[in-house]
Each structure stands twice: as C-alpha cells, then as structure tokens.
Image (cartoon, rainbow over all chains, first blue to last red; front, side, top):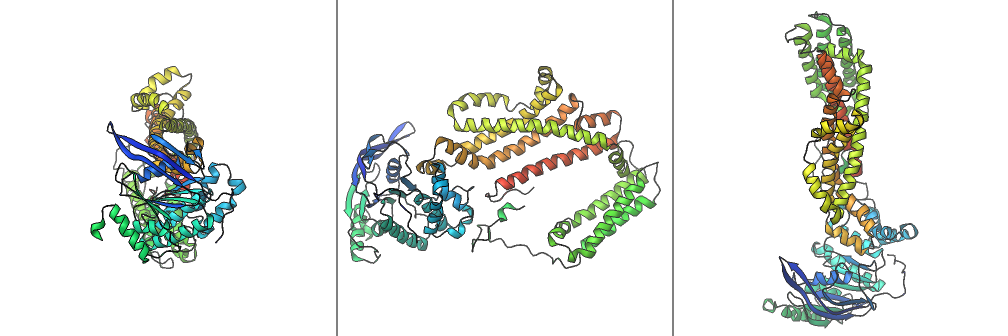
Length: 261
Length: 343
C-alpha cells in the first residue's frame, strides 16, 4: 500500500461543537433535531456517534461538513468557524453516491478537478485508486461495480482531497457483512496510518466499539449527548474481547435495549 | 451498438445485468436456409416482372427486373460464401432473412395487381416501376427538395434545441428565471407551433425565416421542459458530494446538473425532432416554395401519385435517418447508462 503524500503537517483537525441546536421546518411546525450538543474532538481522534435511527446524528454530520448552517450554536474546525463545505472535511455517505456518467477514475478525480488541481496533482488519483485496490477498475462505470467496490471508490474520492477530518455517515451500513468486516479493518488501518480525525455516525454498537477510541451516545430526537465513553483498547480489536462485550452491554442499556441482554 | 454491453475487459467485472444468458445462435458455418428461400423469392419477383406482359406502357419494367435479379444474385452470393465471409457482415443480413422473403412477396404481389393485371384504379395506385421511374428521372428535383428540407429543418432544429437546452437549464437551476419563465412556458408551450403559421408568415421577412422560427419553436418546447425536468430531478446528494469536495456553482451546473440531466435532455431532443418534422412539412406545404413538403403538394397537384409516394418514401428515410443519428449520438454520450432503447 502507498501512503498519500500530505499537503499539510498537522495530521488531523480539531473540532469544537459549541452548544449547537438545530431544527427543521415540517408542515409549518418546527421539529427540533439537535438539542444543545457540545463536545470537543482532539486532532487525530476517532469518535463514533451512536444513536437510535432518525435521532439527528446525520444532521450533526451535515452541520460539521458545512452543508447546512446550524440554527443555534457554533462549530469550529481548528479554531475557525465552519461557514460552508471545505475539501479538507470530506463526507462519505451511506450510499456511495458516485456519478454514474463518470468512470471510476473520473469519479475519484472530482475533488481535484473541482479545485483545478487535476493537472498538477493528478498522480494522487492513481495513488488513491491503488490505496483502495481498484486500479484495475479505473475505466469501469459505477453500474458495473459491486456495493463494496462502489463504497471503496467513494473512499478513494474522499482520500484524494487529503482530508484532515473524515465524516462518515454510516458508510458501511448497506454492505454485506463480510465486506463490512474487511472495510472496517481497512478504515482503522487507514486512520492509523494517515492520522486524520474521524467522526463516524452509526447505529451499529459493535462497529462503533471496534473502530472508535471514543463513543458518544445520543438520545432520541432532539438528540443530546447522553454519554461520552472512551474506548481505550489497542488495535486491532476483536469482536470477542470481554471489554467490548462489557461496553456493548453498557451502551445498549443507555439506548434502552438492555432487556435483550 | 448495444452501449450497455461495452464492458471493459478489466479482470472479472460482472455487469449487473450480466446474468442474462446469450441466446443460442445458429453457427455461422451452417447453411443459410432462409437466405436460399429469399433468393428464390427475389428470383420469382424478377421473373414475374420481366416475363409477364405489362397491362400498359411502362418504361422501367426491364430495369426493375434487373434490379430484382441483382438483389437475388447478391443474396445467392451470401448463401454460397456465407461461411467464409466475416461474421459481423453476415450476422445482420441473416437476421433480416424473414424480412427479405416478405419484401419479395409484397413486391411481387404489388407488381401483379398494378403493372401486370391492372386491378387497382390508376393513377392513385402506382406500380413499382412507376416509382422507380420517379427516382431515375426526377432525382434532381427530388434531391434538391431533400436538401432544402434538411437545411430548413436542421437550421430550425439546432436553434430550437440550443435555446431550449439553455432555457431548461436556467429554469431548473435558477428560481428567479423559473418564476418568470414557468407561466409563460405553460401558456405558450402547449400551443401547436403550426398555430403560429399565419402570424409567422406575416411577421417574418421571408417564408424561410418564418419556417425556421416555427421549427425552432416546435423543437424548443419539449427540449426546454425535459431539460428543466432533468435538472430539477437531479439527486440532491450529487450536489452535496460535489460541494464537500470543493465544487463551485459553475462546476455544479456544468459537471453535475447537466450530465445528470442528459438522459432526460435526449428524450426532449427526440420529441422535439418529431415535432419539427410535422412543422416542417406543414410550413413547406403552406408557404415555402421548396422541400419535400412542397414536392408532395406539387405532385398531388399534377396527379403524379408515383412522385408523391416516392417523396413520402424519401421523407420517411430522411426522418428515420435523423432519428437514427440522434440515437447514435445518445448512445455515444450516454454509454454509462443501462437499458437504453435500441433504435
């Protein structure tokens, strides 16, 4: 595997979420989604946001990405307020959302192309393709790829931008369980090698515990932080680890599912 | 031409629809029985034409017989040398085998009831050799008519398509443009372009420019609406992804919205082409003194029905040729799409 050369010296971004609330307008009424969420992420941290489905965790991710402005509160990345999307903060969505009219290579190139860097830094595209193991498929179109391959392309497309903060919105949620396990390992390896910060949204407790070094449990909508749990376990982690089992029981309890365990 | 099958040979990609097994085809080396039957059918047609006496005086009976004979000879050559000819060449002809038989039968029947037995009232029903005579004798006028029609049609079509596309993108993208354009489009768009005919011929300096305007109008409406609907229907996540990757508004329009809308744009271009044909013919019949529409009108005025049928045939070929061109272009540009309609 090849590591992508870095543009900056600081590996990961710091993120400050300060008293952020958000709401949607729905049929003339206001639907509160986030309720005064505050936390601080140190550079290089891997935080998992866990919560019941529809609780507002994806909304929080969109705010951090700068795709929507929060109704109240402030978001700071490396001390600077988030005013819009920035290529150093890339999002991987649950759907790979590849452009079907572009080949795999052209999909990976989008970020550089949009910023006018394709000519000078085009070599990064090949490196990213190699990193996710899809060099052979560079000329294929998205409809010819399997779900796992498509999500890898989406990962390569994010990596090409040399992100300091990866925002992962259940990127493995729709994959089959085998592909999912492989990609979990790859994500951890990638994070350890490059040192970017990761904010992962998931509703899979085990996934959060295997990947993150900090798990934040969110309440039902409007989401507030219910618990902030450090996961101080060495990588690679194993599903059968008794610590993980303990933490899982604890978290499922917080989510109101302890009766099942 | 199947664009969906243009799968690159990269190791082990399985196209999503790849599970469909290819139908078993007869081997290229096998004797082409349908071809042999078709050869005989065309020979019979040639013989009927040549040997049976004509009911009236026809100038091109011998030529028609010779053409049918030449066609039969070509088929015979394909039957005889099929196994050693390139497969790509023989495959298509083989596919058309049953059609070739049917055509020979239809031609022979047509020849019998018109030229030979004179069963159908003339001059309304023309014989095959009468139509052939139109092509051999009146081709300068017919050819010139095709050129005039093409010039008028393509001029108007390109203007209408470019305007419609630009307007459609603008409406789909900008709320302000949509606010003003939408009611206007809704009122004027459904009006058949031919309804503007009297006004256009009065308002424009020449019937040619008036007709160009009408063709452009007929093309523009469907192209506008379908481009607009294509742009409006773009998956919003495509924009989110591009924005997080650093895309500007310009990039979002040119590299996300427009490519994503292209399938819909091509539906509009196809519908616009159909609408432009009908406006073209009406305009040429009503005012323009050239073109196939004019030729049809002129032939009818002289009760030259063979000329009329020939012009209709030429017009059909021209229209289907243009549609084919458009579909080829689409297949090229939308090679990434699955399940395109084959034309």
